[in-house]
Amino acid sequence: MSTERTPPLPHLAVVGAGPAGLAAALAAAGHGVRVTVVDAAEAPGGQFYRQPAAGLGARRPQALHHGWRTWRRLRDGLERQVAAGRVTHLADHHVWCVERHPEGPGRFTVHALLGPGQEQPVEVHADAVVLATGGYEKVLPFPGWTLPGVVTAGGAQAMLKGGLVVSGRTAVVAGTGPLLLPVATGLAAAGVTVAALVESADPRALVRRTGALAGRADKLAEGAGYAVELLRRRVRTLVRHTVVEARGGDRLAAVTVAALDTEGRVRPGTERRIPCDTLAVGHGMLPHTDLAETLGCRVESTGARVWADDEQRTDVPGVWAAGETTGIGGAALSLAEGHIAGRSAAARLRGRVPDPAEWAAAAKSRGRLREFFDVLDDVYVPPAHWTEQVTDDTVVCRCEEVTAGAVREAVGELGAGDVRTVKLLTRAGMGWCQGRMCGPAVAGLAGCDEAVARRPFARPVPLGVLARAAETASPEGSPPG
Image (cartoon, rainbow, N blue to C red; front, side, top):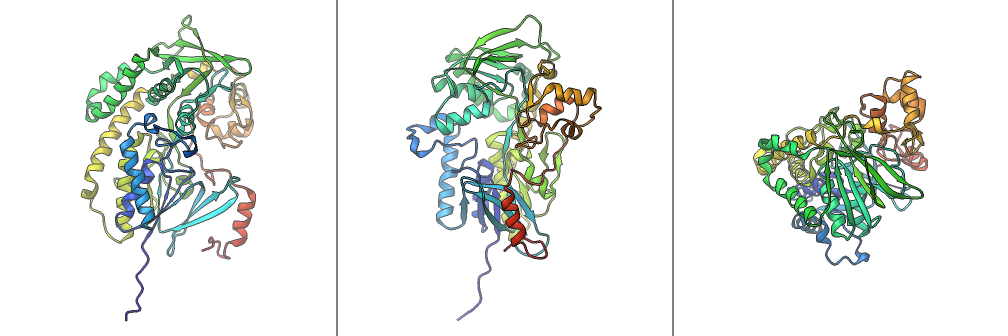
């Protein structure tokens, strides 16, 4: 009788359970790798496939989603792999750091916090990591943006998808970017009166880029479908307009919008007041790069996105990245990148050089989608002179209550020449979010380039967790096994 033991399967940790993370996990698990998916949400799906809690009793949750069949395929595949023991799904686990160990098995330790207070530390040891951490909304301030009733466009969508609630009865959806279309359509379908869709860009500029857009006729049809639905619901659309001010007492009562000239400045005399109790405003998305930065991965200054090669490998051995963290591009692009990352990681963890033919279809889709979203990035940009509408008493950093006037004083009178110096002089970016929300606004007001941040942790961590980690670490400084 043989006493030889079967060597354990290679272990891959996937951070994030959105489209990219799920695609990577399923691809890797289907090709002989043990996978642990670590995700902050209580259920898989990420922001795009956010689901209402079962207790809410939603009868038709698919009505709030695009690509429901794809979501069901991902969900069912995850359930099968979990039941088979090939995938472990750790929900409600908030990753604050991924640690790399150059030598020996278990080269990475994923540090997470579990529990209502996020004080229970959890460690996942893995041979490789896929970062599928998604993106977050770019927030640009304007007078009145801190009033109750003003929410981000993604926040309004998350409330609707996850809680089946809306923040008011009459809404204005404003800003720039393709996200505004599904947000306005979703609110209207939920019974909200959408008083206006205010887009600062001119979508007609897309006509000049039809060559790059033709390869994704499905995405064009999706956008056209939203536009038709808004027309059917008689939602007024204002292009090359921007929100100048939000007004109200205890909460939002109206917004003032104005037309923009060809240089992105407000045209005097075009202001109009729109009564509403909700303003859903968004100016695009930014990649989550914190974990990649702590691992030393290369982050490109253009778009602040994690660099990845054709296999979705970063420049740090054993680390792959997929989805919005490598550049904002929507769910379809995230699925393609996640599939490639999972297949590549599985092959290399098993000692095999992967054949790109294994993911040829996904690579073709990735290429076309990247070209498509590069065009959208060029067209949908915030107004070039948005800072001119930000008054000195407008709060820019909500955590530390720093005003635009304080930022301007730091530059004009105190000589600050970069974002870090502005931060030291004003405390802008020193609060709970550590500049993740206010960073673009501070940089814009200061007239400085927004440098890539090098934060030691991806989220706030209780000091007790750090103290316990130090106590249990080995003398050499490596984490416990």
